[in-house]
Length: 244
Ligand SMILES: Nc1ncnc2c1ncn2[C@@H]1O[C@H](COP(=O)(O)OP(=O)(O)OP(=O)(O)O)[C@@H](O)[C@H]1O
Ligand SMILES: [Mg+2]
Image (cartoon, rainbow, N blue to C red; front, side):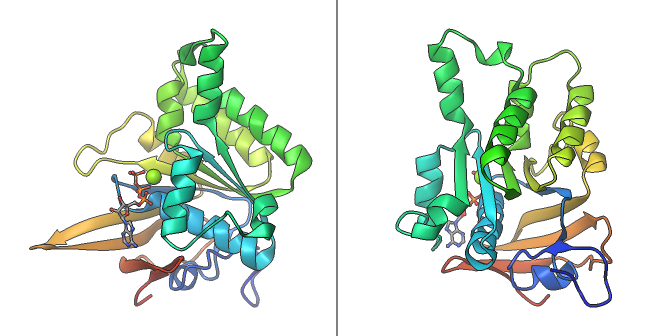
């Protein structure tokens, strides 16, 4: 989908308001970061983008989770109005890969987390998925979890190569990045922010006893996006950015 007169193909987020901010959506094939502190609904927003694209465009989409289990994620999203079970079409269209299961399997096979090259492992899984399904959008939850497993000598260099290889797979990639409210210096964050094509930042701001959830687009290559931050709500399986 693209805006009239525009050559950049865009993947709509189907988040009301966010597509306005983004001039129609995320440029197809780009790698973006969904950044925010704990509980700022990063997983929900990412899942909602996959869910709506699978339902409305019949796109094949993949959610890879490293920490939250598949069952836990499914239950949470079902609770928020995005059930996967019982939706016949979605079983084939929306795949959830639980890398925690692979970690468990590897430890059972006597291989430790630390001896596995997790960047390579993720890419290998993606390639094998792509052979069977034309994955259009990919979510990695989270890039921090992957980096913390990746106990190698030169993680920054490896991250650079990982991003390159991800790009070659020709999917639109949403990488979830957890940032603390104060400590913004987690290892690799600045490297990542420069490497990616776009950043959507999610924030929880407290004003007296009310917490407002807000999001904004910090950067999005190939896009004359708005820079304003707006409140967002989640209701019946839809994320909506208010006033954008
Ligand atoms: N209907 C709802 N509307 C608003 N907030 C909700 C709703 N249901 C749950 N929440 C809140 O959203 C949080 C979960 O959102 P989500 O898992 O998407 O956030 P996250 O940023 O991925 O969190 P984490 O840091 O745990 O990965 C819950 O912990 C709860 O505080
Ligand atoms: Mg999460």
